[in-house]
Length: 134
Image (cartoon, rainbow, N blue to C red; front, side, top):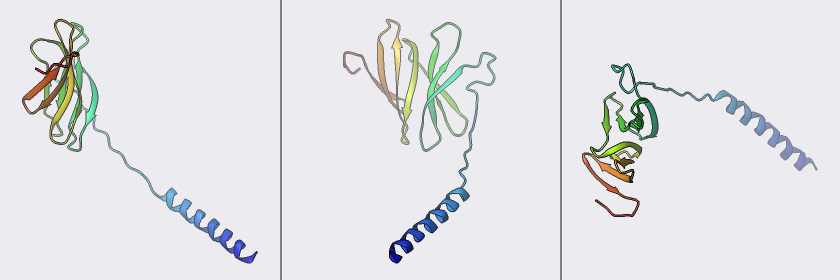
């Protein structure tokens, strides 16, 4: 009986000490906000869909005129922004980007066909819904 009381007492003391330590820890977060084109009075809405360890953000920049009017964007940690939409596309967007700069996304061509896109640097390939690579 005395042994179980000591074990029970030790568990209570450890629980109280653990609770005190957990309350002393505080998490800190920081958020950076930016606009895609501060010089444009019709600044596009940014839909961020991915970020990598280099703090590079990808997504779709959508203008609310001449709908649909969106382009994939890459916002680098340095503040540089690049946009991507193929010449034959109605609109495009990016979904994810890894630490090596491999980016996935999509575009819809003028016929309304959706294409999945993989970009690495300036090289890209896309797949149509039928699975053919071009």
